Image (cartoon, rainbow, N blue to C red; front, side, top):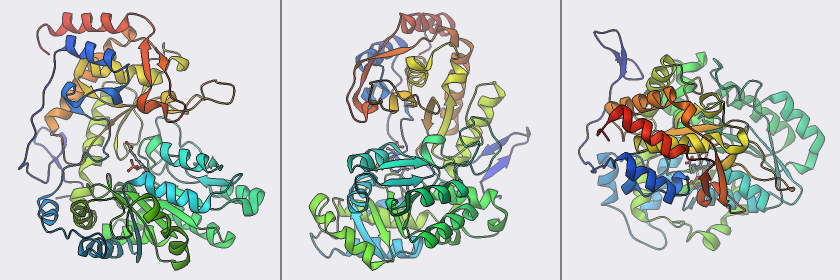
Length: 484
Ligand code: F0G
């Protein structure tokens, strides 16, 4: 059996086989298309505002929606409830030390809580934080503390189609230039594993080592956002010659060894909930630890339930299993290849986290000011009951003059929670997207009717710029009749 658990069928097709069996199930509903039209209108054309009762496949995110293993569920039953000094925390600490190689651990209730503590501790007004690319919550915390970011992705990283195996790499020459220009004004350098907003694209270990070297020369701490580290390690093993024979455990340790501070959302890595900040440097730990009791909870639970702490400890250990971390990238690749066969524009190479459909390529007639990725997310929900997430200009911000800062890309993200969906469900996604692509000229734009000032994509409400949703539904009914 090969590493990805992908087998060749007699037909010649490569199929990613599930290396697990399903022992607990949750019932799903597929509401008829008329109800879906009502639902998306009620939700202000924002898929965040749908109820899961209205959704067939929830591909909004892989955050907090992953399947747990039997070992995780078992460990949750042995949790040690204690405000202080819980043995569950000791087990989490040991798992972090074994898997990520860091001794000092600050528990937090989720990834952005780690970002809050790191930003409050290190980012001062006027500071500049270089990073491969931002994540929405990271950017918000740096800005709230008066800092700015500079994104230093390698050339071509934002190209939708590419054969660059490591689009998440940082441009080292640009990093040196920023540090030379800003000097003491750079408090941290941040690298994000499986860079989320450009399509779950990994960096190479060679690149991370180069960033480490620059950070050491300049005496600036290197922070690794490890929320999607499992998938990045999987891609390093698949795509980087030096690590073809290495174990995932060794790759994870080598990745974390480059960073002074590692933080993560365990809603993603470890298929549990919560998060942590970890380091081997006592002075960095001491600089941050007072903020944990202030914002999160005592130092041995950090706002997490002890059950989640146990699940995290086991889930982190399972991250060293290639069959566990390879499942979602293998399914994503399967869908990406099938969509490509239908000439549907998708981000390539296939990355971690989800399949990313290029909305500007899919809907070239919808101007970026009318939010093509938001329109595609709403249209796809309408005709399939599948909930994806807009990752484009709706997820961006406005400038000081009130104009939209147009996003680098307009993507519909179809996330793959780890080990949750079956392959026939993935085939359904493919089929409905294929149909929508043949009727793409029916899809129009969106405009805001209620727009929060910060992180507007979560709660903002929009409306269609014409009666296109109604016309799309009529076309669906004409082709599928009474089929939902
Ligand atoms: N960093 C990365 C790379 C993330 O993808 C996320 C969350 C966070 C930090 C924040 O973690 O949600 O636990 O506070 N990403 C989710 C997503 C929300 O849907 O992509 P959190």
